Image 1 (cartoon, helix red, strand yellow):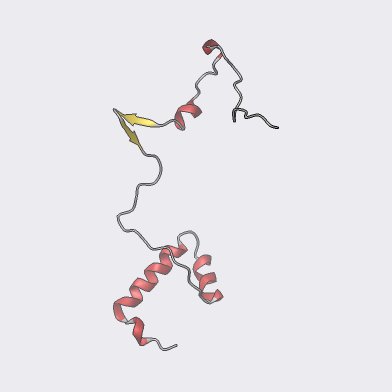
Image 2 (image 1 turned 30 degrees about the vertical axis):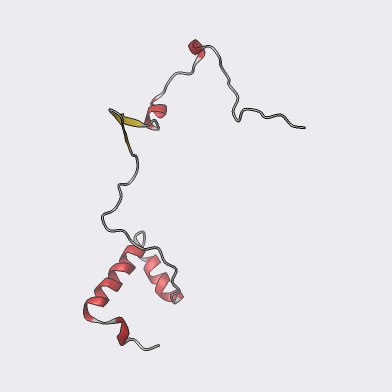
Length: 93
């Protein structure tokens, strides 16, 4: 029968033996202004995009990918531009 063990061990007991707090520690520490936690990372976008799955011809995807980082944004811009002068119902499949 196995006994429950703490998930992490304690390397030190005496607070005087605590490791020094480095700049790296503070770079990853939570930041508060009063009681409010300041969130890290990219701020939420005003325009929320919808995640979908779509099947496209390989050469179309390759051309956009070959244009470098941000290819999905450029592909979206191309579709938005196309919709300015066309209706999706115009295409027959």
